[in-house]
Length: 478
Image (cartoon, rainbow, N blue to C red):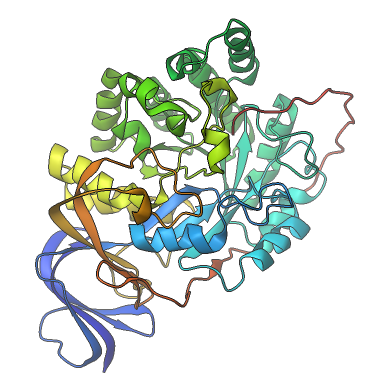
């Protein structure tokens, strides 16, 4: 007898979609086909799309907050939002928690902080920072991070001990050299810190306050230059790399060109870059501030072309929440830079991609699940196939609703999508065969998520890191 059978849904398989049944046993997909009747639970999915649950490869949870960010997003609220939004697994960034995840001790602190509090499965990025080159890279790999993350843009607050820090050229090169030996991927926030910081300072001193002015301080070339540098360093070191949250179509072209030259590089964009454009930003205000910034409508349409052409490997939320006071600013340059969105990835992408632009269901499943699973070694996730984890999101197409603040599971009810009408709904989310959300009953009371660890690495020989007498700057954005 099976534990669960999902019947009569349109099931997205790797080679196409078909109306069929899926059976689950012991948290795994046990059979796909018709004629299966015996199960402890049967779900009738008639009229619904049965997709693999989303793997959001770019999420910030701020627990522990270290006494500085205790009121930001925690594991409980963040993963309940995942459940409601059809995200069954996410990969957590090594910031903005305090301490940042940069070595074995800080990784363990984070795992303990989330113990028993997660409604979705959680994998972790480890950080690459200038201060963890002596042993931190190896410790993180041995501890189970699935990949690494670094910032080429300015990040972190130097007044907070243990906060994240961006790389310089040497630490990027040496970190790549070490990460290459683990076989894992380095994800990179690629913006030119020197130029964007200076342009932002000049605009602020000149009395600029608008979101439009903020976008102007982060022009396209400040994305392109560090993407090219990262690719050059990857060629030199053999490090596998991933470019995070590309906001311009020209950056995708650079990644595609490098792939053709044999570089092991992938890229993502974010839901908000595919949904908003600069013409809306002054009205939306700082709730839509992020870096790289949201760009013009023409750029957005070209980004969609690249998604549909398969040049952009997957789409993420870059869920980066904070408290309301840090967004409630009249001056865009003074506001926190991060967009809240993990709860509205699947429904918006289904509506905007499948229903409005003709994306195939197979590609939809690749963009939200299969491709990130492959890139980050989550081989038991990301597909509806026998033997894989029974992670599903059941989507009700062409069913419009308008998002309200009270619909959000976040600790702080902030989102640029509030007030937007979305023409698809998440009907049910299933994690390893267990329902964790239904539209009728909401998120279940008991969490069943777990932390996913990928332990082990090749032996890493470290180089001594010279001390530097450098004045650190406090970042305005992350």
